[in-house]
Length: 116
Image 1 (cartoon, rainbow, N blue to C red):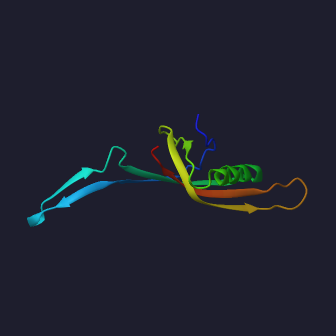
Image 2: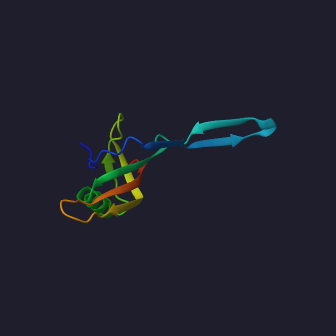
Image 3: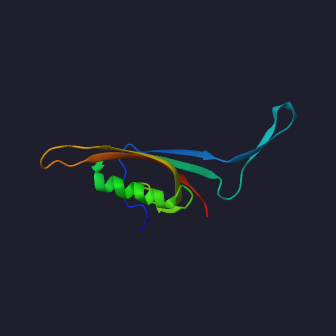
């Protein structure tokens, strides 16, 4: 079971950038090869919109304890579990006033895949 258990909004996006080594020779000839075993750089841009204040608080607290450098597990929808770090996130909260009202918020974060 992944460490990060919150389900992101369906509008998440994934970026992939393979790390490639290239050698260029004369006459425009070149050779390319994957750079190492774990050559695939991947990141996910996630949004958690209209969540309860408690959920936003818990997500931010979790990310703060990881400090941007400690890996945790995350399972992107439809994919296998991966180890990631989160170097940056933004949280906003909309406070409601009045009887029987609750606060909601939004968290946006970028998770970067790491190999350890």
